[in-house]
Amino acid sequence: MMRRKNKQQLADLLPSQDAVRVWFRGPAGRVLLDQEHQLLEQRLPDLFGYHLVQLGFLGEVPESAFATRIRERLVVDTLSPATGGVASLLACWECLPVGTDCVDVALLVHTLDFAMDPHQVLREVERILIPEGRVVIVGFNAFSLWGLRRLWHCGPGSVPWRGRFIAARRIHDWLSLLGFDLERVDRLMFRPPLWRMGMMPRLAFLEALGRRCWPLFSSVYVIQAVKRVSTLTPIEPAWRARRSLPAGQAVEPTARG
Image (cartoon, rainbow, N blue to C red):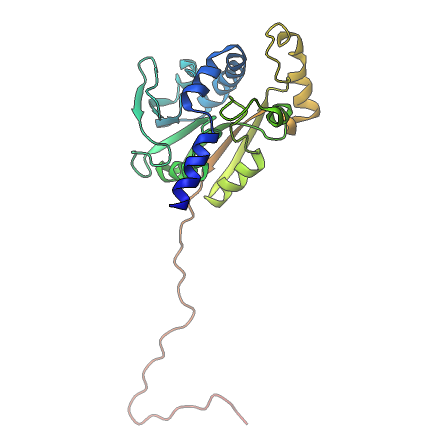
């Protein structure tokens, strides 16, 4: 009962998925998604496989990101996603209706930032991925200018400031516990969270400067990790069965005086 109550309180604090989607369709969210999509266009073509599952739908990832290596895509969302012809499924992220060890790539675009239970989401991702499968996680960085902006949020449910903003290091620790190896981390959005769109292009120089001078304080990170599966190698026992002695044969002593 207490656990259910805590989950309800958490649900009241986190912004609704409708509000999150509306914000990312607005001017500020659109600028952020454009940067993220440009990076995904560079990274996703290097991944290959038959099946890619995307958890959450905040904006259509350009088709050029999947043009070469990924054959089938599935979007799993808690709301009905307008995916423009891409297969979609309405389901809970914490309990995916997807078979075990059957997905090559999992894509999480701010999924953990607004999930009820991000640990369980990652456990489900580990379950559905094949050995050597990849997960790509896009998330808000707590240690950034955008993270500081959360201290002056406008009240419960305000977007995106009531999201989790999980530090990249913590995501790395969670992935390590689940048996993932970190492959790369990209950083983006070094501009402050200004909503006057006329100012954002003028501060574009901060992107290159931030990547060179203060990369750990980017507002958004893109983490790529691979699922490792340890195989058990049988080890032959060092001992050997002692041969039985013929009847009447004496046993030689093991210690000599």
